[in-house]
Image (cartoon, rainbow, N blue to C red):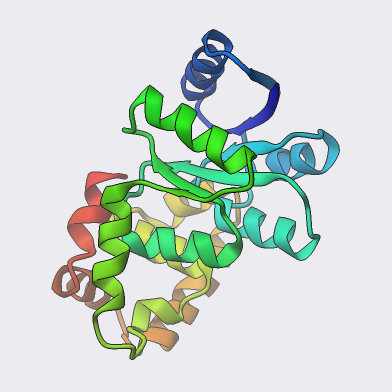
Length: 216
């Protein structure tokens, strides 16, 4: 029996995943969390082989949780289950220690396959995402400005490009507006851009804007 944890801020998503796994053979959902802080506590306190982790969680995002679990040598194997199909997120997730990466549009059979493979010690990446990552590896090795951002800065950058206000970003990440403003300043400095409009233009030129907006 594969013990599974689910961390997603949408109750319908958690209910749907639990229902899918309860109907399948060999899976047992042993815990759920609705935000980043609760997800981290759940992973530390509830023994399980696999955790299905949403990327965009309030409090702490999925990448931050991954880094913390990796630094603690935690045995749970994490599958990122997210709306973000951009290779930039997948690259960051695997660098943080994720064992599988799926979008929420995946078929039930693929989800079951991924959990089973990861629980057995393997890695799972859809063929489409693998192709995107392979194509990206063939480009210049020089880092682009947005690749220099930390995981939290990248999340704030994505939300800025998607048109969210400072207060909306603060609410979405469960942080203060002052903290969001600090992140914005760091983003402008690291990417050497002096306005949010410049960030949007950068996202358009680098084919990031459409992907961000489609999956907001």
